[in-house]
Image (cartoon, rainbow, N blue to C red; front, side, top):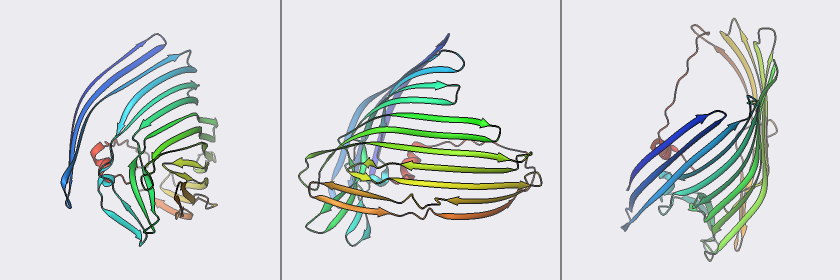
Length: 328
């Protein structure tokens, strides 16, 4: 059984003048929570009071160039599924279990961004997170078991440079590109060994390029080609191997869009599989994650009614519903 009460107050302001815009806000929060287990008569209770400021300032040099600086301090609460100590067994020697002792994570983020022609964005960022949670593996060498448990990391510091591009290069070709070069430094406790503080750090790269094409005079033939590459990176106490993914697709419409014929292929080279490895002190384990991502799909669709009508639907996201549905 778990009960949580949140009490919060907000204050925000914004101002624009000449070529400048400023926004700032502050949120104060008091939370108390209590959880009880059916096999433990002692409740697990905690409370905290935190202040979360946010601010941003932007200067527009002209219609094509702008510079922005932002800062925020935010909280991320563990999902209810992560708090539930229920055990799910993968096999006789490995299982995942929730952690009722998880604490909320607090993150400070500072970002400096420069935008050109509303198409090119360059960003420098620095993030400092306390008690952020990650699923760690704990290797019991006496019982020959591996326990996967969401745990609070001591500290995560990462900084990097991002480049974002969204631009139509021609009337028939539009590209969306995201790249990031970043450095992670992660501190965690070796809970299964001697509870000593361990540190992992490394540089990593993320790149994703999606290209959209249109053909024929009536633009009834479209295509997309995407390429994703992620270099080795850190995840909690583990290092995750590199991965790649290439997707392609074609779509042809007939009879003013009433009929649509499509052909798509996902993860053509089957490069999205990866290895997760832990190697510190007396912990030495790894697993290979293979996903059923490689497929080819042929589709034919008929649209009833007026195909020229379109609608925009707003989707309201509820934080508590996300915490119930999210599985980390």
